[in-house]
Amino acid sequence: QVQLVESGGGLVQPGGSLKLSCAASGFIFSSYQMRWYRQGPRKEREWVATITGAGATNYADSVRGRFTISRDNAKNTVFLQMNSLKPDDTAVYYCNALRNPLSYWGQGIQVTVSS
Image (cartoon, rainbow, N blue to C red; front, side, top):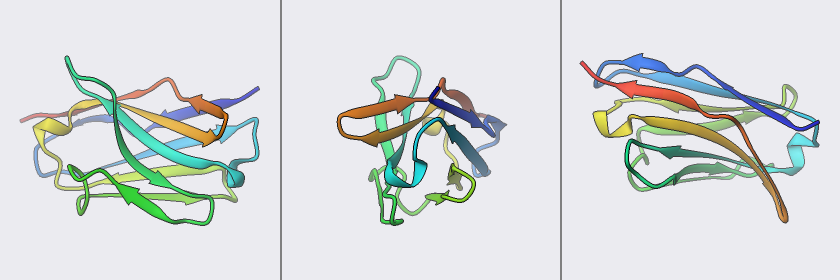
């Protein structure tokens, strides 16, 4: 049974940091591209960052330089380090595992940036 379980969300002040984790099980983690998406209030879901099985990364312009995606293939976990957070980063963050045509999603975790 495939599972993706996000953790590490919460409330943080503007300028603060959070580190999200996504623990995966039920598939060969190292062979999947891992992505983070987010969906803010009254917004469409948007892509945030990608990391390949080999560790190559890519970021949306809105988070480049502030967010860092990483993975630990030994622990089947992907991370999203979020620094210099802004109110516009407030969203439900989703972990996604992709190996076409297969795509798996986590349940999402809330991140709120507010003073």
